Length: 239
Length: 302
Image (cartoon, rainbow over all chains, first blue to last red; front, side, top):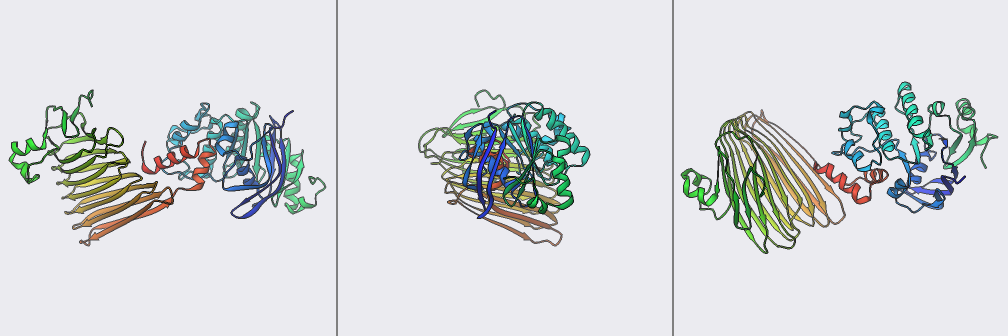
């Protein structure tokens, strides 16, 4: 089967610092994967680089989507191809309502009611004075409206209580996973993995993916017990 | 304007195309009003050449419309306008001034006096759409009598080559105003000056400036509140620079002549946030679409 997303020996810099140091990664259609790692290991940068954020510069390697190289493609063209990302900390945009943005970007009409969002919420200025949970729901609503083929969730489980997280995971499953959309879950805590059960769990350390494991529980147990340092010496180490 | 039944005054170049009066309003060319009503001479010392006179005498249930356009080459308009809103009336006015074509190299000068009598209120939306080769100069004076209210928004979304705006507001006992001046400066040299005088006790006013500098624009704004009595005033001036070749200078000034007055201000000039731009691009908008949306939000334009 053709790969949906492939990263080949990816090196990238941001703010003059080397952040990604040779990332190799592959993802198939209709697949859920996870990416774990400590703070500042490069997880969010990797997500931003996949989407083509001009803030980061690829110095070596390439990004391929459905077999085609997209390394030099603008972010908006990547979105049109079907890649979407929920931001960990989305910026507030004064004077722009969530409903205004949805009107401009939506490829499909997704009912905000399904996320238990009231119509008044859509009339608020984008991310301005949103609580942590509201930001996550706004992000989810936007990417669901984009009708993507691949969604990268950057720390969707932070800022949500367990009840809300369960509901969000249920929606991700129903609206995306069941419909064959591939999911990459970037998470620090790993809480969401319990609900979405990734097929492969990757561990990132210092700008490189150092572990790929099918059993997410094993990875979580190891990290919980020994911390990420143990991963460097782990026998499950990726090549 | 042709099909707008509540249209009140419509002028193209120097010619009045339509005056449509309704019961409760008197609308005339200002030169005619100067001869017809003695008291008008208090506002127009000399006979005006052109411009409108609107006298709202009774409550009307429709908005008033004023439209002044430039449609021919090198027209130089010099308008003297007067709007009087009588006591206790609640009025809404939509004013539009524009050039109908590109490269007309027109000049639009307007001197206006707006008088709100006791307990009256006016919501005035003033829109300007010009071409890069036009020149515009506005001198507006608002007189707000006892307990009157003004909600005035001036929006210039397509700026001329040269733009001068001078606004003076004088508030008497208990009067209040909410002023918003929005200028989307594109290849323009703009000088904006507004002065809010809180003359008597119980007055209050907010002045908001939203200025965007794009494509070699130079905008200087001088915004002043003077409190002569127990009153409240606030200035909120914000500028946004879109490119390196533009500049904005903001000078807020508060003058307090009464110990019971409370005056505050906030002022900032910033650039477009890369994070905001990239965020919107990563939602599928092109760079231009993202920029437009951010500017729309900043200027408060729907």
